[in-house]
Image (tube, rainbow, N blue to C red; front, top):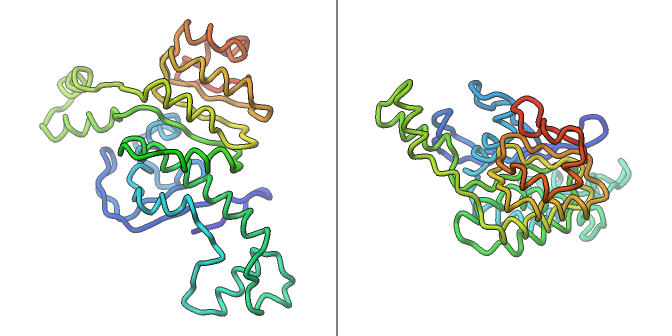
Amino acid sequence: MALAEAGGSFKYDVYTAKKHTRAQGGEREAVGLVDGLACSGNPGMSRTQELGAGKSERESFFPIELGQKGLNIQLEQAQASMQEDRNRILNTIAGRAPADLNKPAEMVSPKYEDLNSLLRTRFAAAVLRPLLLAGKDPTTCLKRLSSGRMQSIDLNFTKVYESQTQAEAIALGLTGAELQKYVQQHHKDDSFDTTTVENIFGSLPLGLEQLNLNAAGLKPWHAPALAKAVAASTSLTEINLNQNQLGDDGAAACPRVAESQSWVEAHQPARGRIAP
């Protein structure tokens, strides 16, 4: 786990070794869950693409079993190769004075639980979609998501990425116009059912400020659940609805969003961020 301080806040990146092949980007040796964008994103992807399906597709390779363990993480039970290192790490987390960092680590500290809650929420955000695709019960995941705090979250409700269909076409030796035709004919833009989307929108983290739904597979019938979540939030300041298919019916169901002067811009590729 890497902790990088930037502007007084921390970003949490979790990586693990796992060989896998991405639909775009080739073979990889490791996969990570990151706050925001990964520096090693696909060079052929625009920032807009990376924020949407790109980030979700990349993180979908994170081992689901490991992600589920993260939902119940307890840092105070972690081990280190050297006991001295473990003491210093836990004592630093607990906020003990520099002179006490080498003392035996405290068994209990409010700071442990604060950090545990934060990490559980981040794991929940990352493994939610893979859990749903695997047909596993998301109850614990949604509970961790709703009980923790995050400033921003990226959500994606599509079942199949367009990049996966493109990979199929490439494997068949198709290029150019033939490749595009294959993608148009075979790509199914299926999204999760309304009840699932309602449960997710009803479990957004506390203090959420930025909700990124770029290319999230939203349809008009998902709009009421989104409207309810927006109305219930007292902290949300920015929503990215770029590259979705909410349409006029979706706008009518989301009055607080639709009233924004930038609602139409939410349907334009380069101008998808709006303030409710």
